[in-house]
Length: 407
Image 1 (cartoon, rainbow, N blue to C red):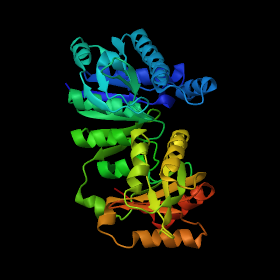
Image 2 (image 1 turned 135 degrees about the horizontal axis):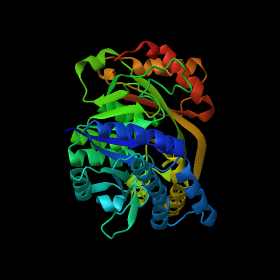
Image 3 (image 1 turned 180 degrees about the horizontal axis):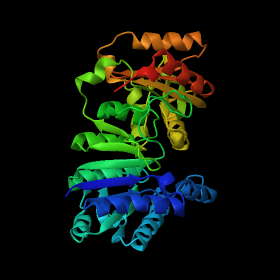
Image 4 (image 1 turned 90 degrees about the vertical axis):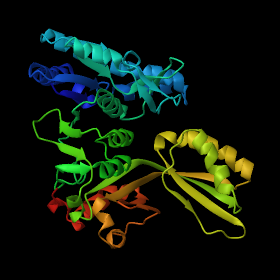
């Protein structure tokens, strides 16, 4: 008997009618004599609503209390889904992250999973129950509730699939797979039949909303078979698998964008050995994720250092940088938030030259200024003004002929 882990996102459980719809899908799998474990997110916009409430009370809410608050969204959903299944005659039982035994570190709001007990899930399956698990949450060694960051329900599902040695993990969302670009911006974007873990990781970390990047890393490390599907259609979806040679036929597999970026610049930094460590050690200690870093050519023993962070981390980054600026005697801290990152991704870049040059020419011909550049073996990212994002994505998709790509 196969074991399937299914994860349903917020749009999939956004209303009672949608909960009924996914319950019917779950019931069909259960009736086919498959074991199934279900992970659900909070109902659509519920996490944002709770976050807004928290910010009405505090500009920077205490993160321990914020985790406890945000975890309530998924608890509501698991109870409703379990109730719906029971109404259909399917034996089901809801479980929180604490009850499942998802143990994390102490980094509130972006905790990392350290181990998964899953004993109660195994027992439930042996009793022919369908476990409905709250995504996005866990518990630390002090028994405090923690959350796994935006998209954390993906990580919950994949971690459970790895722990239970599931045959596959199906991620259900409001799109029917992974596309060469956002179909809302590029109508000609095509669904990929399959994509490598490495490409999916780059696309997720560069702005694609289909899967959480940390979840992809976990899946790759534990060889969890992932299929990304739509809750609202029977399309086959996109399979996330190990890289194979055929994937290198195309230089580029997709173009992504990320508007959740801000640039922080320290102006007038003393150009001395060890200064970068003095700047970025406090940033790391504050659990702020830094992406691109640029240091300008020094003049008169002074330089400027810029780096990008998620917009959610801007208040914390400013606080940290103001302290650092005083300690190292920098002139001032500047923040620019109307920026975005546009990226090309593809394992084929390893075997094709000239991708970066072509990307830069395309942007230049359109009059789009590139502020920062970052590259790896399989991706090229550019920070540009946010107002140019859609034009850049459309151009890159067309010029790299991604509408003709197949995999």
